[in-house]
Length: 574
Ligand code: GUN
Ligand code: ZN
Image (cartoon, rainbow, N blue to C red):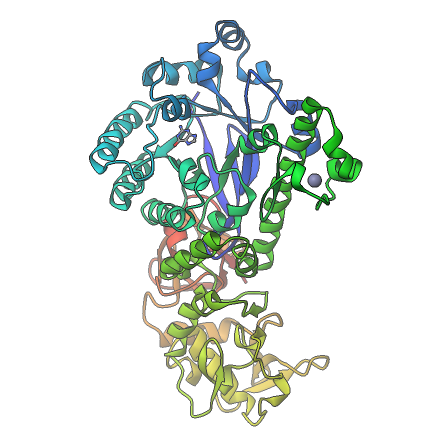
């Protein structure tokens, strides 16, 4: 059996994505977390994980199974799915974690790969060597060399390889590892970060994850190995991590530690129980009185509820387009998280390239980091296209042409010192606004494409500009959520003529032309070329190889993603 992995993006915000991941015909939504099951000590039953927590993917340890004589024979006979009684996606780890903890393991790379193939893991690992943070560089280098050699031996494994990227805290080593692993494997795991996480070194964590992301294709599924605490999920997901694994829910429970989305508490120090999950609402303070084994189980359940709750909250934020807001809140849970957020800003140019150019959520100023959000970079570049004599200071963007104040993000930017919109003079003629909006969206010169006899109609309900007509023909509509201009055929033709190839264009394969003419979406695999200055959510011209205009549409991903992805929608056709 050849292992199959399909991955496509459904929603995105900053560097985060909600993805659809399909492994061996089993489909899951990312970002998600794989609860880790210790085959020797099951704290929450797999049946319960499946029924009460909707777990569709979990992780267990192949090394422990291999080294236990009783279990080994059973699991070899039954296969891992029957053995665990779970027909979702099963990932297995190789013993690398034990290697990191005890300094050695009693197996070889080949043996553990072979074992995972024989038990039928959907996802497996080779025996990568997690270097300790700040270990001697020569040592980290040596361990990385061996890891990459072992990766080579796993290239043709009969499972989806969860390929460890190592390199300790040395970013040049991480870069080298990411390039090699990213080239050969679809599922890339940022490894050796457990110690960094334990020491709350979140700025180092950001450096490592960002370095890896920048050096692998964007269609690779990214797993943050051993990251299981909800405090960091939003940070890691904003950078583009898709998978997590958590033994933490159980390990913390064993130590009577109570997880919250903002940090960990010692259960016996709590005066109140600050949660209403099924466990906490059932017991409230009586939770503390439970007999030890029962308490550990219930605490593990609570920890897992909190973990999944935070994931849902993050996915909702991605969907709504306000992940920046959630980040601003979460990263104020601990000073080291705040420095993690500060460090993330170092990568905002990279993130701005993949983020959306417009958004359905308001821009809230929530702290210093808001001045460096991805939007600021994209907006400042676009503002260079528009000249105006009437400027209005809209912090944190600076001076903005008055003509543009009705479009995203200016219309919906709320800062502590925000003026009421009524204060903005309404003296600008609509035609001037529309021309400036054209320049902002499409480039210098696009404003001239709206002729003097254009008639701009407004919504009777909101009084906002909605349609642009010329000689009774609708040439563009204006989207209500962000006041973005959506060109119709006539205006699209003018844009096509005014802006030379490859500007504003998505070039598609001949094979896809009939489907696009039919109004079907453009899939990534049919895109041959794309204007790199476009941004996700831009309106684009869809052309064939001879630059004939086929249709217009909305860019669903960033150009970088479209180039990297084989699966999923690139452009939604109008
Ligand atoms: N578990 C926690 N960290 C790691 C890692 O870096 N590699 C592997 N294989 N397992 C891990
Ligand atoms: Zn709870």
